[in-house]
Length: 335
Length: 159
Image 1 (cartoon, chains in turn green, red):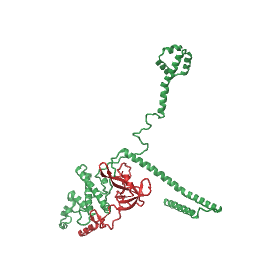
Image 2 (tube, one colour):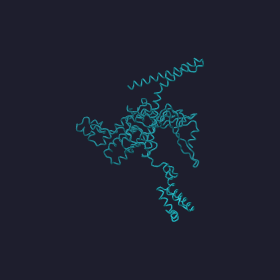
Image 3 (cartoon, chains in turn red, purple):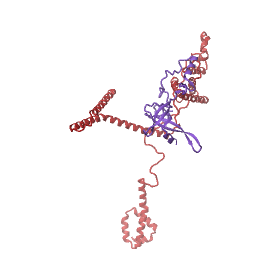
Image 4 (cartoon, one colour):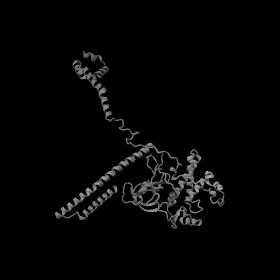
C-alpha cells in the first residue's frame, strides 16, 4: 500500500472522513503501519495534527457533552421542573357537590316543612262560635283540607311564631319576626322541591334567607343569650361566613389536603413517641431510685455531706406507685 | 406601619376573634393610620395573640390586653388583662342597667306584663350562660372555611 501517494492525493476533508471511517475498526494497527510508511515529516505533522483535531471534534467533544447531560450538570438547563409538579402522595381529592343556596343544608334549617293535620280549622275561623254548633259537613268545609295551600302555610307560620312570642299581641319583636320568616322559608323550600323552575320564588327565598341571617347576626350582637335560645327553639344552625371566600380549585384543595396529611404524620409520630416514653417511665424511675439510694449510702459511708435527701427518694417512689396504679386502672378498663 | 405602632403601646383594646390555640386568644386591633400623601387617616387592622390560659375571652368580646415583659412564644406577645365589654351583653354605662339594642330589659318585661306575658317568652333568669350552643347550633366561635373536599365525614365548620 503506497501510503505517501494516498496522503498526498487526499484533501484535508477527505482525510477526516477517512479517519472517521477507520476509527470504527481496528485503528491503532493501521496507524502504526502508516507512520512507518510516511517519508515526509511535514506530512506526518499535518496528519497527526489533523487526526487529533478531528478526534476531538468527532469523538471527545460529544462524549464530554454527553457525560455532562448524563450527570445532569448541564450549565444552562435547570435541574428540576418547576411547573406542573405532581405529588407522589396518594391523596384523592373529591370535589364537593354544589348545594343550591335555598336548600335547608345551606340555609341552616335543621328541619323541613312538616306534615300538617288537615282536619284543623282555617286560621280565620278557628275561634268562630257558630262553627261549634254547625253541621258536620259545614265544619268539614272550614278545615284546611278544603282551603288553598296558603292557608296551611299561614297556619304553620303562626304556629312557628307562637313558639317565641313575648305576649299575646307580639308580632313585631325580633324573635317573632325571625320565627315567622322561618315558617315562610320552610314552606317555600318545600315548594321549590316541587317547582324547581320557579325562578321568582327562588329569588324571593334566597333574599328572605339572607335577611333572616342578617337579623340573626344583629340579635347575636345585641343579646347573645336570646340568640342561642332562638336557635334552639327554632332548630336553626348559625354558621358565619368564612373571612376568605374563594371558589374551590383543584390545586388549592390539594395543597390543603397535603398540609393536612403532613400534620397527621407529625401527630402520629409524636403520639408514638409519647407512648414509648410513657412505657419507659417505670423502668427509668426504678433506676433513678436505685442510683439515688446508692449515692446516699455512699455519701453516708464516706462521711461526706449528704446531698441526696430521703424526701427526694420518697417523692420518686410515690410517683412510681402512682404510675403503676394508673397502668393497672387502664388495664382493668380495657378488660 | 400599623405593626410598629401597636407594638410600641403597652396596653391595647382589641376584639376577640375565633382562634384554635388552646392557651391563647386572638385579637383584632383596629387603629387609624395616617397617610402622609393624602393627609388622611385610614383604618388599619392588626392581629395579636394574647396569653389566656382559662379562655375567658369569647369571640366578639372587647378586651384590654397588656404587653408581656418578654415575648412568650413566636406569636404570643401579650396577655389578657380585663374583659371590658362581653359580646351580646350590653350594659348601659350611665344607669348600669342591662339593655337590648335601644331598650332596657326591665322595660321590655314591663311591656310584656301590660299585654299579658306568655310562657313562650325568653326568660333571662332561667337562661344558661353564653356558650351552651357552641358546636351544636352556633358555630361562630370557630374559624369556618369553604368546603373543599368531600371526605365522607361530617364537617360542621364547613360553610
